[in-house]
Length: 362
Image (cartoon, rainbow, N blue to C red):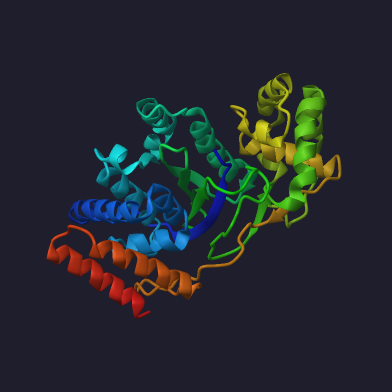
């Protein structure tokens, strides 16, 4: 099985509420038929690739009739897709696990259940699910707390992750897309394209320039005595960090981190990825070790937001402004072909085409 490739990030305004039942009841069969059409023509791996592309995912949500710029498009689309293919997963060769909130924590169990039914070793898939969440919450600390995690895979072991985080301060949600192809490293530049309305200063330990920091962080956790690490953390709390940093010593509590640091030292992870994967090692532990690496050992990690280009959102009048018009048009064309092959009733099909036509005209 190939290692992961994160394909993008999209920022969306944080909207409360949920899709009305009358709309969701229509999104489910439409998502089902579009998926059947794509898988029939191109195979389940291609469906994963398209879902992993932020533009295509957004276009899919538009076609299903959901508010294009709302954070809810992520959870609602994934929920409609999961519900839509229920009962035909094995025929399609496509499995959808996880979801929002408590449902996201059931992802490993769901993967194991499907793995057993399909004679597929679930361990690599469970690891991919867990590590994608770890990276987006701990290795990249951008202020967004994950609350949604959907993991899709095929019997061949191909997979895609769509997860979303919430930032209550700026009232935005950020969506992270992963595709299990091409990249051989979870923690070194896994991004193929990242979409973001705004850029900020982020502790980005996946950046290539953070390689020395990753090595130093792993060595601190395995080679230095835990009590020495805690003592260094206490000393750091008396220092003032430069204003550009988005991590603060006031957030650190050395005594509460003592057990985690001791546990990491006892388990002796071989590298940063293994350290990140340890149970109990979360954002605060990584932030603490990153501070020691920088201020004690002089090894600076990257603080750039890993956004490579932006997707500019329009206003609430529902008119999106696509950055990459060629990609956006291609997404619409692909969906148009899929809808044309569905078994939808004339009324629902015509509504979907009308939404596509409105998008084309923009």
